Structure formats: structure tokens, C-alpha cells
Image (cartoon, rainbow, N blue to C red):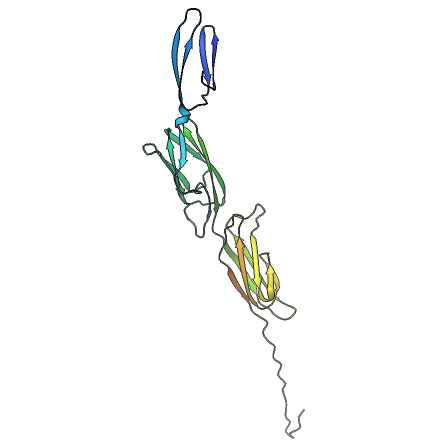
Length: 241
């Protein structure tokens, strides 16, 4: 009896059950006692002939998409499927679809995701079930909005910059990795910065997937110098007052 199978006899009925552990065909004989009778049995491990193999570039089944514009396509994920008449694919991002061709055995996953998230997908073959998994991390375009730059008014009324970051894939608490640099070694990691001297301030933003935008520069103007003029009045008698 092949490993993984068992034989029971109940009421004159022999029952073979289990799952063969070896691949291919299992050939064995069943011989009764008393009046000997031998029956040749062949059981084929069908699952051994079913498989899903990634044929697109290594890593395409575990990819991160940093969209800089909407409707950016993922790198197509292509599999070769054997021994199946259908596949069921679950967990893909919205906007991404799976197309399976039975004659060629090719499964193509492609499209443009419309939402940021981590999408763990599964591929299940039918009728004999083999499961393959993958992950697509999607970061939609990051943008900066509601930009407000306040210039320096005077020594005790310094400048400020306020921005709103949208898109991408922030952390679960809605945060991004923010980095400001500016004059005189200025550093800050919050979206809104205050107490600024005049000069150029550069903003860098990265989301939780490591997707970023090009650095953006904001200019805070220094205070306008105050000019005091001394007025001299000359009276008709040429006496200066």
C-alpha cells in the first residue's frame, strides 16, 4: 500500500482512502484470503500534475507600486498554470484584473490600481486545488495642497509655512515621514513650521511604503526694511528748527 493510503474491510467491502504522498501513479495489488483473489489497483496523485509557476520577472509577485500619476499600471504578473481548467484569483487591488487562458495555461494579472493599500492575493486552481500567493503594495500619487507661506513681518513676528499632504500610503494614524531643511541648519519633521527667518525651505515627503515626491522649495521673504527720514524745516529767517 503506498504511503498516505489506508485499506479497510467492512461487511465484505474494501475501502481505500487517503492522499498519496508520492507523485504520479501508485500501482499495487489487493489479495483476499481463503479463496485467493487478486485485484490490481492504480491510483494517480492528480495534484502532483497541477502547478503554478511565476514566469514574469522575479519579484513581480511581491511588488510595490509608487504612482506619480493616476492610472499608473502595475508591472504585469504572469504565471504558467498546468493541470487546471480554471483559476480563481482573490484579493487584487481595485482596477487590477486576472485573465486566464486555458489553451496556453497563461495567467496574466495587470491593470492600474485606484486605491492605496497592501493587497495580499491568492490564486487557486480548479478542479484540483493548488494555492499560490502574492502581494501588491499600492501608493497612489502624493500631492501637497493648502500651501500657505507667511513672510517675516518684523523681528518679533517671524515667518511660517503650512501645508497639507494627501495621497500615498500614510501610516495607520495618517502620518508621513516629513523632512524640512532651511537656512542656518534649520531642520523640522512636522508639516507646518513656524518661527522662520527669511530664506529657502525645502520639503521632502515619504509615505509608509517608501514612496516619495520630488523635493519642493518654499521661499520666506525677510522683513521689509523700515526707513526713517529726518525732515528739516527752514523758516523764512533761515533759522533751522
